[in-house]
Image 1 (tube, rainbow, N blue to C red):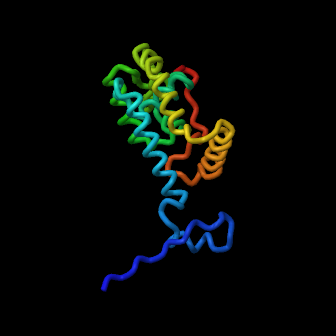
Image 2 (tube, rainbow, N blue to C red):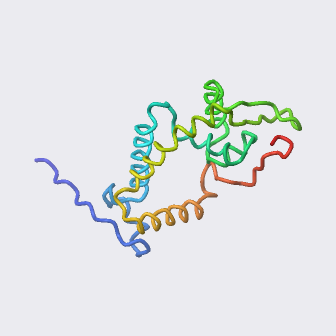
Image 3 (tube, helix red, strand yellow):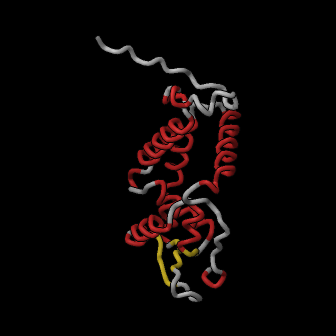
Length: 182
């Protein structure tokens, strides 16, 4: 005789006494980590679909836009700006250099450091991506009313900011671009 499936409880109200011990018995689709991961997967799929002609990934796009906003920057500063570990940042930068979207050089003040800079080809790419990226963001949030979108984004920002230091790759961290490298 087959065992009957275990009944899964709906998520408890956050902050209730049972939330710290009851997640195991909560349905996957009622858990914040699961939902955040799924939403990320969905957004990446939308981004890739909208930006398919350019063959660019969301992480590559983040590096390019960080360079556009920060100007020429050391790789460690880019790593901290986009929340990506140094090794992966270097790999992404290498791929972007190969495609001529950015250029990389040794720092004028510290030969151990590399400085990345957006090229004209990279700037043109960002211009071509603008509409597709906007559609991907809009499609990700489309199920929410405009006021709910603002509230959702504010909650996301609060959760990320509050927990930033717990990440393997915290965003920020005081890394600055070198003035002489700008």
